[in-house]
Length: 150
Image (cartoon, rainbow, N blue to C red):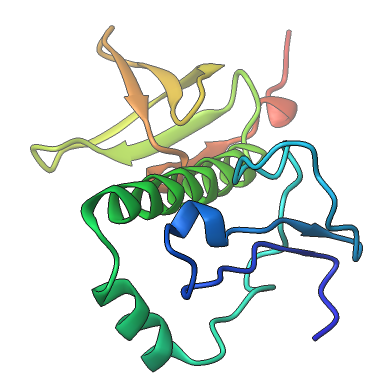
């Protein structure tokens, strides 16, 4: 397998963290034993578990400390994927855009994009309230670029 970036896991190691090894462009000598990739993003879907049954059996043999370590790695990765998805969706909007969304009570609301947060977009609605809405729940009503100024 020729992957430019990876995190091979040796499930046969006494401790899970001892079985982790970073691989970047076939370079394997890292001073740190941390599981972090130093901010380098992996292409989604670039690493596949070849034998899921072996992975499941290996996970069953892990102790609590190793399971917590693996859990932390998985949660960090899922958070990174979620944040990347939200960031990508946010590029569809600009400050000043008119957007619409459905409130939790079912009402359809419209408002103007005020600012971009880490995971949400702040919207000032026509009724004077401010909402922080996930970008996936917004629909563009009118682009700020299309507004005609007198």
